[in-house]
Image (cartoon, rainbow, N blue to C red; front, side, top):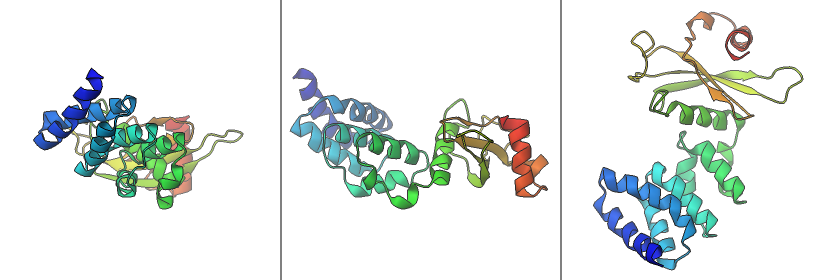
Length: 208
């Protein structure tokens, strides 16, 4: 009861502050709120989604789904169009039997693979942010395997890249088996090749 009272009081208080520290705290509270089925918490969670922060809304949607509360459709639509969160939101809704709320035009393999790669690139150990541009190159399906690789080129001015790689087209991929990766190899050696031949070389030389 004490924890419930604390969360119920902290949610509206932090929403009023709108500082960076408050937003980070709201992200954590939005996630743990799934364990507190209190009308005050549920009401504040719904209000929380109106802040328009994908970082917070993803966890708020998870808690609302876990508590059996209807999630406002505009919130799901916004997450579906945010590449950093689209694939994770789709899989979250699938887990709760609510995949039909995810916009159908955002459920294609290519789009969800792009979302997986963008999410991975956002990690501090990678680019630490979304790429400035990302372009789909095509798919690779090894013989006798179910795994499909969706291959992309992307570029970024991230400080995690060396000067020689900043704003250069780099290669990354995401597979339907959950493997998402980039070693920041340049696309330049393949760009003069027909795309089918380039993809074969990328598979042989980079993906394996």
